Image 1 (cartoon, rainbow over the protein chains, first blue to last red):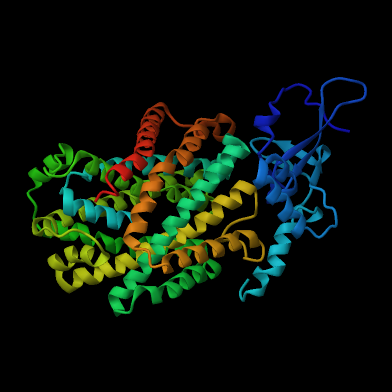
Image 2 (cartoon, rainbow over the protein chains, first blue to last red; image 1 turned 180 degrees about the horizontal axis):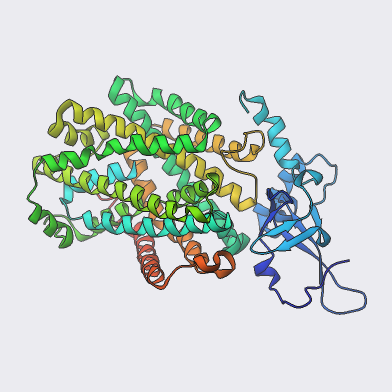
Amino acid sequence: MGARMSEATMDLGFELLDRHIVDKNEKPFGKVDDLELVIPSEGGPPLVQSLLTGPGALGYRLPGFVGRLTRALWRRVHPAEDPFPVKIPWGSVARLDYQIHLSIAAEETEVTAVEDWVSERIIRRIPGA
Amino acid sequence: MGEIVMTAESGARFGLSHVWVVLLGVVGIILYAEMAGRIATVTGRPVFDIVRERLGVNVGLMNLLASFLINLMTLTAEVAGIALAFEMVTSINYLLWIPVGVFLVWLIIWRVKFEYMERTIGIVGLTMLVFAVAFWKLGPDWGQVMKDVFVPSPPGGEPLATYMFFAVAIFGASLTPYEVIFYSSGAVEERWTKKDLIVNRTTAYIGFAAGGVFAASAIGVASMVLMPRGITVEDLVTVALGPAAVLGKLGLAAFLVGLFASTFGASLEVALSTGYSIGQFFGWRWGESLRPREDARFHLTIMVSLLIAALLTLTTLDPIKITELSVVFSAVALPLTYFPVLIVANDRGYLGDEVNGRVLNVTGSFYLFLIMIAAVAAIPLMIVTRMGS
């Protein structure tokens, strides 16, 4: 699992974290809110296993009260009992430039959970939505 | 609302001695709107995407929060402006018009397509140029005007701190953060491509220059109608005296239409900007071209912002005071929006060959320097001069 950025080196904090992600239809998917790294058993530098996105991931990067509030709200809204942040395996990354292009569609993942919640509970109840 | 109030106040008290600030502000907003528009056109990344990518999540979030609060203040002032325009026409207290005004703003955002909305605002807003006509008709001594603009001499009797306070406030009013947020997001909404870069430049130049002509001539009219009679500006009715005294009923009517169009237009733009900035920061789907059910969080943000603005106005706080506060805090927050724009406008990773040229960078950096001075000076000046009183 994971991918080694073989030839080019890249500053993960600057060129990957907080960048914009678009899905295979070039629609907004989210931001790279956190990274999951693994240390290979055969040794060597850590590899990026997956990108994490959404308030579930962001909540852990925000300090103090703001972070706790973000996580609590996300848990409240998320349909799952004990939700885990949305994970994008590195294999689903098609291409990188100033944004991250995925080879999957947003609808195939759980990334739309919060949007759907707001849409169903509030917005769709207003005429003309 | 910011420019309408601040220019009239300044003209009535300081004559033409603040017109140079308007000119400075217009060039600044043109430079930065063009940069932000170019970045958005080439990369599809409006301002708050860039803020997050360049400043990281913690500093970026503080930036987002500050911009959001200022947008709320601006929105409150603009919504009050719509209601005051209704009041001047109907003589029914403005507080009763606030729910009507806010509902109309929301309805337009909910139902009307971006292009129609933006074009209509732009065209109707041109009625504010009634101030330019009025100034022309007043027949000022143009030689003296040039002298007052380029060699400003604030009238005696006013402390320097008060003069500077108004300078910072007018600067803040002409460069409000929402304008750049809205402009760059608009480029994405209208799906500009590289071919539209010319459109970007022309829109930035003509649109903001028209705003500058309005602001400068509004100072001029106030300096010739209000100042000699010792009238100070405490409400919008006083602002209307200028065009009404010079052009009669027609002048008053044009002012009222222009007031409504510009406050209504600004309310739309600021309300959308609250949704744009937050949506872009968190990577949501956003925009007017989608149906509300598809970008529910974007629309919810706008609705909540409008509701807060309406409630703040209904506290019966003086709309003029809210406006003054909003432009001062705009001045404080300017570097937060403008700094990341200047940085990314130089990044080939984003823009390829469309990065800033050298002249643009020198001017852009000079403006960033000015913006920082204004930002640092704004609050101390506000306290020392007690909001210019």
